[in-house]
Length: 145
Image (cartoon, rainbow, N blue to C red):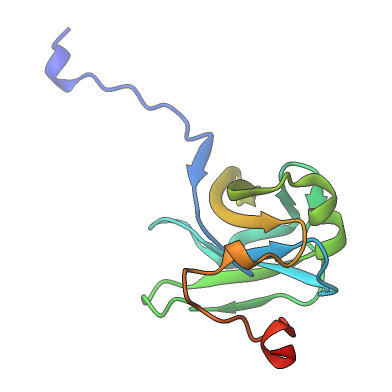
């Protein structure tokens, strides 16, 4: 047998998706409703084929069935899928930290996908989450002085 013509075809079990989460900072005291995820798949896979009911944040929080949107959020010419997660559920499982990794997974066609982004999770409004010498518009401190 000539090894130069022999090839092995292994099935692709998982692909890596590009994930972008919004907001970039999650304040535990905020009363917002949603965490938004933009999912972009590698070439050869179509976001229109994603089973939206399979999408999970951290393997346990399902994406809401509505609203969702197909578009090109980052304007790179590659379509993405926008889904939302309940903010209260996400806050309940994420630890505090400056760069908390958050994983989104799901199924596209017959293949699973997974991707990760990091966000900042803060317990409440704090001065130190701002760069030095930058004023915070959401804090009344400057109005009192």
